Length: 326
Image 1: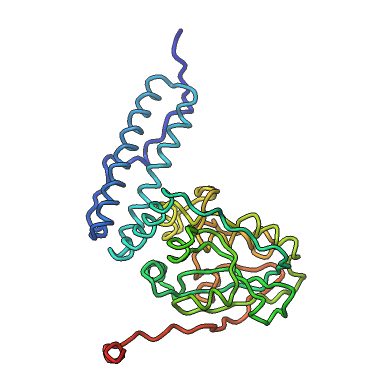
Image 2 (image 1 turned 90 degrees about the vertical axis):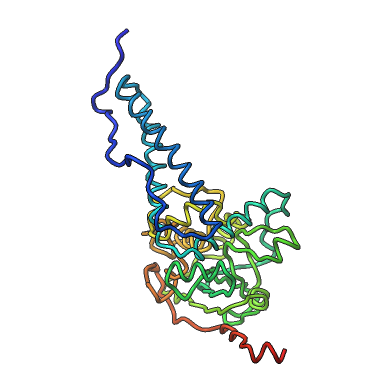
């Protein structure tokens, strides 16, 4: 039987590079260097597969091969975008990202505590967002990478048993985690609901709030509770590639996996699903600063953004004199 040739399915190889991109100009710290070597090896593997698939399709014109070829080409495009993102980072920034992801990966190899759940009896409503600027290395890297004052964002929720302006009834909802949760409680970074007062006591950094001024009825407590339950316990983003591509906002819709997310991504998904936010962005490309006046990138529906308010100031750095006195 003669082989079937499909003229319309000739593969487009214009986006496939002739060789693996050079590592010149990428971060040089030891940890990033090892990660880059791994990335280069993986890239070379996909490049070889793409070439083989191209020749097979040309020779056989096989039905179904194009889909696999396009998948390989997509992976190559991902790697190229990762290279572009990495080249824009300082060695310390990339090292902070890789160390954080490696730490989470190591912790996932051991049995974790059960995922967190929403405490019973809460009647939650949405009142705004909280923005954070932390002092630890990962937070500093996020601020530096995004050229922003903010390293983390959370949704600000309120329990109806307290007045809306009473912080005692406030909760923050976001994808995050602390060293104490990981080491003591075996709670890995994940989407969680935490009392505002508890979060403020243990946070090393500055905190702001930005309330929403609703012109139409806010999402009902039933809607808010349903969305809290939908995402709570979801692990923090597992893929370094997704976070790298977010730097240049090159993730495409559906590029991430439904089994993990980072802080600004989960806030965006929640607000868009609640009908409060115009769904105009790829969630995996959204950063904490996009919820602040720095960009005003995100537009609300039936509500406006209030003024940003300082809730906790950054503690002054200890000088040599103060350290000596201590």
